[in-house]
Length: 329
Ligand SMILES: NC(=O)c1ccc[n+]([C@@H]2O[C@H](COP(=O)([O-])OP(=O)(O)OC[C@H]3O[C@@H](n4cnc5c(N)ncnc54)[C@H](OP(=O)(O)O)[C@@H]3O)[C@@H](O)[C@H]2O)c1
Image 1 (tube, rainbow, N blue to C red):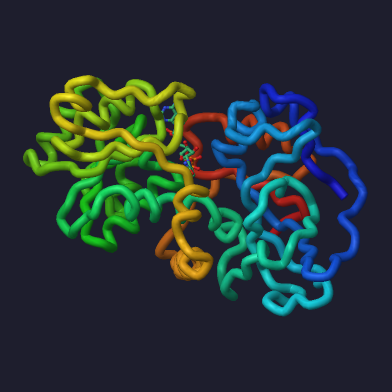
Image 2 (image 1 turned 90 degrees about the vertical axis):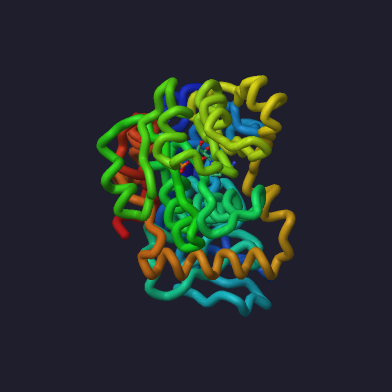
């Protein structure tokens, strides 16, 4: 079977190759074997290849934080999935044609859910949900500001906020995505510029923005903090600039804005297994019903991992790059 191995940590398309490795074998007791149908290339996977992600396993290493697969075989005692079921894997190392995992890590997805959307269920929808839930007790009518608003997380957040009556001020770096985001329910879309705080005040009529959400980091985080009301919270959850988050002293000291960080694993760990299952069941239904949707830029076969990685690092894409290890969906 084919698998993506990193021979070193470095430029993703240089260090990642598609290699032939032995099959995973038959499932043991309590195990499930599934064929990987699709996996997305997320920013965190790119960081993993570069060696700048929090996990840096010994080489050769296989990336892949999420995927969707079709169950091929069950070990003794497995009852919660059946052969043919679509499952998402709660474990990593998914850039491969086949996986053998503990059955409790294979979460079945509802019938009718597009496998391409299912491949993107585990990380970004839950991230958007927990960013909204875990930092500020938002009430209908409250404002939230976020950057990378046209990312998968940003789009999910717009929809989930709208459903709670929370207004979103969405910061992007190009104008051509504004209409699409408004169609999703964005209240305001602004292009990032040094005068972001003045424009934010103008469009909200000075209403307090209680939560700022940043995944660009560096000075972009400072600009988000400058938009947030006195005593508000800025959550840093990514770094598309590759920089560390900055915050001005006026925001931090004089206005009592606090800066905190978010990581999905930590967010889920605060919840019981039953709550986590409930979150994913609800998000899967929303993806199935088209309430949530992550646009897809392009599909690649697993052998073309290098051009897929090149594309995934280009700005201005119209969605995710998906890799299909076992042929077209
Ligand atoms: N902490 C966590 O647990 C967690 C979980 C999930 C995701 N994340 C983070 O969330 C962020 C979004 O992830 P995603 O998968 O939703 O992203 P995505 O769909 O792949 O979109 C990437 C976004 O980043 C923008 N971008 C790229 N480089 C940029 C730069 N230098 N400056 C400003 N914007 C830039 C892109 O803008 P254009 O469209 O204009 O190119 C696009 O909006 C990433 O930073 C990711 O690491 C964190």
